[in-house]
Image (cartoon, rainbow, N blue to C red):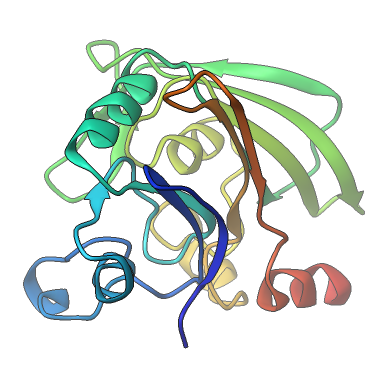
Length: 213
């Protein structure tokens, strides 16, 4: 099934990526697997990657349609002039709001760790809802854009994202269908200086979990 298109112009397209679909071509055993980029290219022709979402992460993702747009939007991400907001179900009870400011570095295993010589990484968060003392729904806004940033940051403070076997207790994480992280909102200025906003509502598998816990 072709993913929903949240917004498009002559220079970009924002798609609502389903969980389980690679955003861009994978490696190893996932090489050759159809990706969101492949699907978009069948419809639009050339598509250029601006940022990425992990395979199990759902939600809003931006692609450029031209080399000029690719250069412009990639620069927005580099200079942090783009607002990306996620929602996540995390393990344990959190309260209020805060900021995780810890440097991150990728390991050979594929995991990302907090280390003193890592790249500066900042995640702002606020609690949306508590589910008893065991689970918390949070809004997370990434100020920097590192690989696995939200996943590694919440794990580092003792609140791994539900369903994330890479960063949490494997037995407990197997209770969930996938990593419960969703790219919710994206906001930026296009090449003409106009404000662009897109919102992807949490998919059914995410909402089903919230209704069951």
